[in-house]
Length: 137
Figure 1 (spheres, helix red, strand yellow):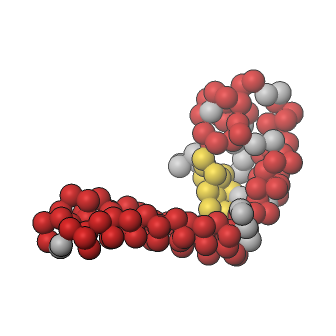
Figure 2 (cartoon, rainbow, N blue to C red):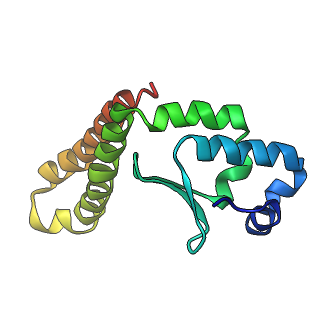
């Protein structure tokens, strides 16, 4: 089952500026790549790659742009890099904030300053490695 043009434009007013045929082509491109419309949650879901596309983001794509993005998303290396960044970066941010607020109490100041400099460097290295695995840089 696929959503109607009216339903999509109601969920995403940005699609109103596009012709109906272009939106229909976009929906066909999405469905052709294995996405299924979830009528309850109001988004497209692809079980093969475990990703969903919210209706709020559909106005950012044209059919060709969606095809290019899908090739990136369906690449297993992209998924590995994305999970690497999602797994470690938030933990490092929490660690940095905790160190910034409480570190000077528990550890000597010289070591505290070194840790304050090291944590962001580690985060940047992980982010660069994740982006490289995702094929973005």
